[in-house]
Structure formats: structure tokens, C-alpha cells
Image: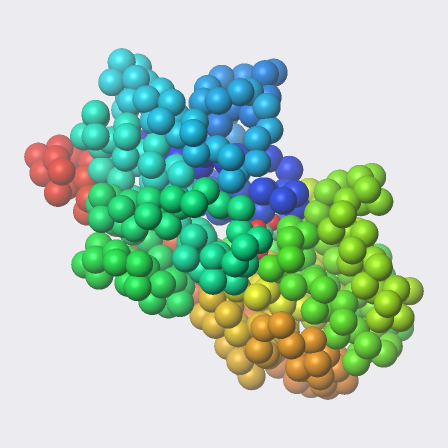
Length: 405
Ligand code: UDP
């Protein structure tokens, strides 16, 4: 089946760790690869954000990335991309109408991609599947005045939920949020993200570390809601351990990064600076080596639509101490594959980390169960099979006589 993935700001080719490059990029890359593995023909449409990008890039057999001209060919923060979505949609419609390749289904990632997909689909009669990845209502609730999303985001998200053929929720928490938003229940399916269980494995090379000092790893974009500040504050309660933070700008630019400077100042203030190391962005293919070097992953977001990093750690046989929010409530089984504590509570986080680092047997049991859970429940192969069935269902409703598989 021909599948169009629309991912306006998150290119599967981008370097990860920066403010707008993280889980969605990984998700689109891995899902597309898994669908191609199942024999599908996938095109990923993402905004052209540099003049020297080729129009198309072949990512692997069955997956081509297409750079869509919409807005200036330069990096633009995602919260400023809305005005270009009409052009994005028009360009897609033109391609699908006149070009030699038209999709059987379009799968939009993030709300702005949804707008572009709907604009194109209306002219071409292509069914649209929507994954939000993050919701404006949740962001507004947690970030209040600091939320820089366009003011009409929530209204658009609500309208999208009614305009598309299916909405994919990634966790039970997201299902509740989507129902509250007004998405019809009959239009919802739950398909969690996956983890690449060929790359993220317990066996394999690990980054060098001090064998005598327990290592707590924390991974993600250096944005406030990821809670790195809470992990750093918690280090006061875990006196012997070191904390390694992966993510943010490339290592060479860490010194000038406001968020990194703020975290370093906090570490000084908490008198843990000698045990906290900010590494900066690490290429995706090197991530398994970092997880393998850790005794535990600390994931302390204030909220989290899904959260790939706990799953990646679990697939490497690393237990998780996390906050019981969003997707973590589904992926991490409290007391079995890790421990969950309340968000924004460095004390509870510190106590949980100290207890787990002091208990070898418990760590081993968690690690074994975590690995098992990641492999059994969260492979991309599984996600691709479930979504493949969704794509078939929506295209058969629209075009009942066509052979779509
Ligand atoms: N990541 C990476 N290099 C980094 C930091 C993060 O490759 O330096 C990857 C990480 O392995 C994961 C993704 O970026 O696949 C982050 O996804 P997550 O769902 O945890 O967070 P999001 O960015 O969606 O908020």
C-alpha cells in the first residue's frame, strides 16, 4: 500500500536532541521503516528547512523523504509554522493529483501536519489518519503563559479530531484527553509507539564509565517540562551516584545554551555539580551505548504524551525511575519494571533512585521484566501491523472496490 507520512517539522533525517527534534522524528523514521519492512511503499513529507536539501532522499528500501517547499527554506521554530501549512497542503494536493505517485492513505503527525493533510485530502479523496503526539490542551494546562503555541491550536486540534478518518492515541492518558477534547470515541484507536529492538539491546558496546560510581542517565530535549531540574535536585539524596544528561544542543554549543547553563547553575547551587555531566546531543545510533552504560534511567517529565526514552532504556535492560504521567503510566509497570513517583517532586524521585541503586536484586528483577515488556509489547513491527490494519480499514471505507494491500 502507498502511505504518505506527513511530518511538517520533524524530519526523520534530522539530528535529535534540539528543542524541536526528538520523539516525533524517531517515531516517523522507525514507523516508516517497519511499514516498509511489511512491504508498504512510504513517502515521508517534511518541510524543506534548508536551500541545499535535495527534493527527495531515499532513507531505505521502501521509504523516501520528500522535502516540501512551504515557507522560507530555513529553520523556523515549530510554533511559527502554522502560516505555511496551507502551502504545504496545496503542494501535496498538486503532487498527488498530477504526479506519478498518489497515496492510499495519509498519516499526519502533529496537529499542523493534520491541517496540511486535510487540505490535500479534500482535493484528492485520500483518507487521513491523525496522531497528535502532543496536545495543546495539555501543554496549556502545564505551561500556562509560557506556552508559545499559536492561540488557535486547541480549536484546530478539536476540529481535526472530527475531520479525519481515524485518530491514533498512544496511551490511555491520551485517550482521556482526546475524549475531553471532543474526538468521537468511535474514531479512536490506541497504538502505542515502539522501540527498535534490534538496535536497543542489553548486549553490545557501552560508553565507558566509572565502575565504582552508580550511573543515573536522563535523556531528552533540554526543555523545562522534561524535568531535568528535578533530577539534578534529586541528586542531593543520592550521594554516591553520578548523573549523566544526554540531549540538548551539540556538545560544542552547550556552553552557550541558556537551558544548559541554567541546569549547570542549579547543579552548583545543589552542590552536586561534580556529579552531574551534561553531554549534549548524541546521534541516534549511539544512544544504545549510553543506555547500556547506566544503572538506571531517570525520566522525570511534568507531562509526557508518550515518552520513547523509558522504552529505549527498558529494551536495553535498564530499569526506569520515572514520573507517573502520560505514556509512562502504560510503559513502566510500577514495582515491576521500574518505580513511578509524582511529577515535580525531587524528594520522592531522590528517595526512589537511592532505594533502587542500593538494591541490586531489585534492579536485576526490574531489568529483566523491563526487557521482557519492551520486547513483548512495544516493537515497531507490532505498531506497524496494527496501523497497517487501520490504513486498510479507512481506505476500504472510502474506496471499497479497490485492492489496497
Ligand atoms: N535522542 C537522541 N539523541 C539525543 C537526545 C534524544 O537520539 O541527544 C532521541 C531519544 O533516543 C528518543 C527521542 O530522541 O528516541 C526523544 O523522544 P521522547 O519521546 O523521549 O521525547 P520527545 O522529544 O518526543 O519529547
